[in-house]
Length: 200
Ligand code: ATP
Ligand code: MG
Image (cartoon, rainbow, N blue to C red):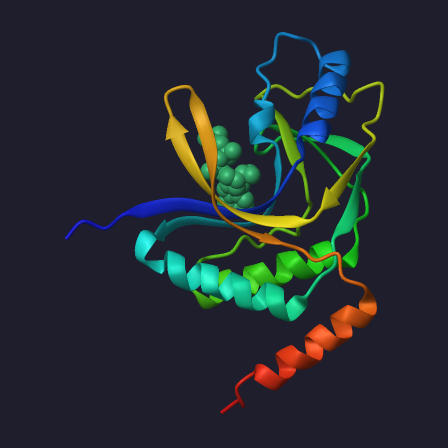
């Protein structure tokens, strides 16, 4: 029997305005002779699942739907204000120096969902980031620090597909974070609690 395998990860997408603004900044502060990551690929990974059987996809999506409903997070902001180079992976990235608790909650819950489904998890501490370049040689720190504000209002499950022209990400499923007030959230949480099955 043929088993279809998908390479999957959860991420926060980057809106087109920010993609263009980041590209503009990148063109100003880095030399033109290093190969940049295409702006279509900009994202902040929340959880890397890696190779997953297509037959597990429904369970994964149902799990994500359930946990996001239970978390009932409001949309939140991420201030991108640092740029660094990881020599191990050869990645130059931008990201927040500090970030809201909502982002940690999302990351932790998705990691435990992945763990429940038997997906091995990275032990490294989480640093949210957008990869801008892959380069074996260290890149200099930019003279102008990045300054971008992302509005996290959607979680996306992406499939990573290797194409001739490079890797491409396709949206498999997405979940919108609410713009609810705290009061709405409380009522939402109560109705969720009522519906939860008793634990055994
Ligand atoms: P490529 O590997 O083709 O150069 P890529 O790294 O963008 O491109 P993937 O390897 O499919 O594509 O990774 C998708 C996303 O998951 C990227 O944000 C990547 O940094 C992240 N990722 C990949 N492997 C891991 C891992 N082992 N642990 C944590 N995150 C990972
Ligand atoms: Mg990779």
